[in-house]
Image (cartoon, rainbow, N blue to C red; front, side, top):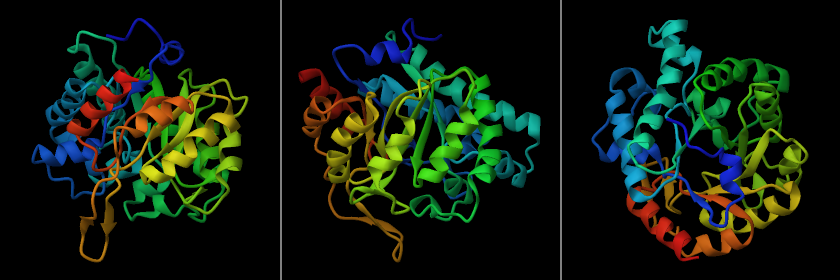
Length: 302
């Protein structure tokens, strides 16, 4: 059951909406093995109940927007597991349905954001944190369009074009989603005020200025300190509500295969983000339900 208000209408309200946290983080906490090139999308075929349970954990924590398990899903990726085209379309739709079911049980408005991750995520080699894949905008658009169409047909409230490392890929995603009938948000992954591909963030964000299909723009999957700088910039450049959902602040050490350092995602940051134009506030990697509950309390207090 869809909410009564559109997400765009809700963003005009007095209080920012709280997003969920890292879906994979919660799935791992539930004991799921995500060591697969499809990552959390594998569970759409193998154990969709776990996906719904993870969404439900974030709803209980206070999240009003749930991001689907389709981030790393692609028709090519499903095909490598022997999943045919029609079944793959059903799995894309199932990602939206799992989030919708979790939200429907909440007894309050919960919106579903269908995740469209970058091309690098589908490669499962970490290149979403570099961008610059050697493909043209047109080639990237051709890759993304079938994913966008499958998710749009499933009826989400918004398409989340997320963790985008490169302005060229952002352009391709916006082209692929043009005319799909579903509103969008666009969020870059950034470091030190630039996209992961090294482009000026202001110029990259300017791509959505004047695009009425885009209802929010901002950053995700970045350090909280980078989010601090990006939120006011996104509001100024785009003139749109800002979406912000950084990582916990811990660092990934690829050499030893583990997270290091201490979390720096302080719920108190929500107040400054909200004051600077953020209307969608949540977390990404390593941000679990407890952190989302704290963010929910901080947003409500503001």
